[in-house]
Amino acid sequence: MAQVQRTPLADQAADILLDRIRSGEWGLGQKLPGETTLAAQLGIGRSTAREAIRQLAGRGVLSTRQGAGVFVTALDAPEDWDAVLRRTDIVSVIEARIAIESEAAALAAERRTAADLRGIRRALDGRRGHAPGIEQHVDADTAFHRSVIAAAHNPILLDLFDGFTPRLRQAMIDMLRLRGDDGGADDDLRHVRLADAVAARDSRAAAAESRSHLVDLAAVLS
Image 1 (cartoon, rainbow, N blue to C red):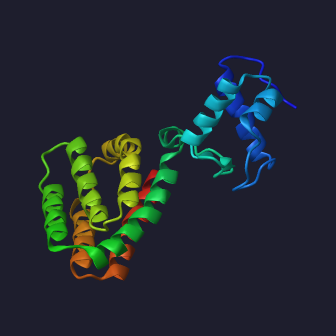
Image 2 (image 1 turned 60 degrees about the horizontal axis):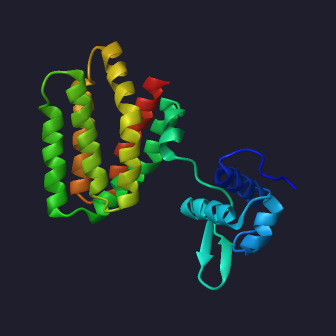
C-alpha cells in the first residue's frame, strides 16, 4: 500500500486518499476507516491524517459526521473552475454558453419581472448606443446578455456566465478587431428579437434567438 514519502505530509496524504477513492476502494456514502487506521496505513501521525481528511472535506469529497465517522460524499474532487477555463479553447466556451444561455433565455421569458424587463431594455439601449471602441462594445454586449440571464432568477446560471466572461472577453475583442466591425444593424436586430421574445414571455423563441446568435459566433471563432 502506498505511503507518504514527501512533504507536505497532509497534502500528500490527501492525494493518496483521493486516489484510493477514485480507484473505488470506498464507494459513495461509504465510511472510511478511523484516523488511527488511516494514519498507520499512510505512515503518518493522526493529526496529519485529520488534516488530510479536513482538506478533502473542504473539496467536497468527504464529510465528517459527529459521532458517526467520515463518509465519502463524492468520487472525485472538482477541479478549480478558473483552471478549467484557462486551458479551454474559446469554441468550447461558446458551446457551453449555448447550453447555459439558451436555457436561461427560456427561463427569463417565463420568470422575468417588470423590473427585469426594464433592466434588459436599458442594457439593450446601452449596447446599441455604446461609446466608440471595441472594448466598450464587448462590455456592453456582455452586460445585455447578463441582464437576460439575471432575469432567469437562477443564481447558478448567473455564476457560470460570470465565470466565462473574463475568458471570452479578450477573444471577442480580438475577433472584432480582425473583422473590423461589430456586426452592425443585423447583429443589433438579433439582440432586439431576443429582448422582445423575453418581453413576450415566448420561451421557445427566446431560446432559439439565443442559440442561433451563439452558434453563429462559434462558427466565426472556429
